[in-house]
Amino acid sequence: MDSHNERAKKILQKTEQVCSPEEVQAAVNKVATELNERFNHVETDSFPLFLSVMGGAVIFSGQLLPKLNFPLEFDFIHVSRYGSEEHGSEVIWKVIPRQNVMNRIIVVLDDILDEGETLAHVQKRLLEMGAAKVILAVFGDKQLNAKKPVTPDHVGMTLPNRFVIGFGMDIEGYWRNLPDIRALTVDPLVI
Image (tube, rainbow, N blue to C red; front, side, top):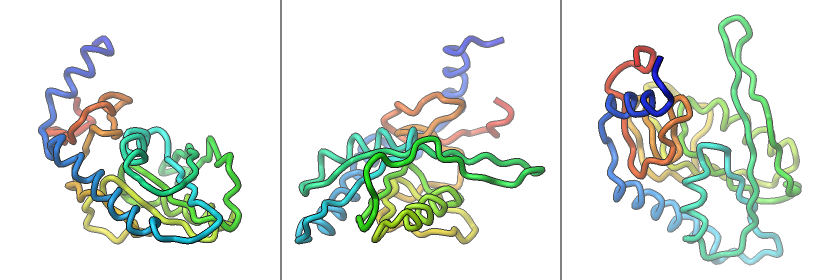
């Protein structure tokens, strides 16, 4: 049996770069520019509340927030999707916002919009909790050949329809810390 270190290295050897660190930083800058344009001239007594979806969005959030030049509040949420053929799919909220969302503009930050079920649930739940508006900002939007239940308001980059890791995205808990985006060159089930 492989040690964790050997396993992580073995996985990385079965990847190829699809976005360089420079392209990743350009994507973060793109989202920051769009959000600055959106909120920099808003005259309101209420700052937007940014919610980072743990744990994938932690790197995106950490690099994006210092680039924003308007007042905001920050918090995080932790949701996971449990699903099986027998039980369907259910989104579990492990951590809800500590800040009051009532009548607030909420910006949800996430690493990747894949099938979109989880972000659709998050958006719906925040609106049910009384949010005035929920804006979705994702680092990457995976190109699928299917309609998604939500459309992000801000997207850093489009990602291929492959299993990608790096910049917050992981495989088996490994490689969230990569500065680039890498795609598996083999089926993740055979690694």
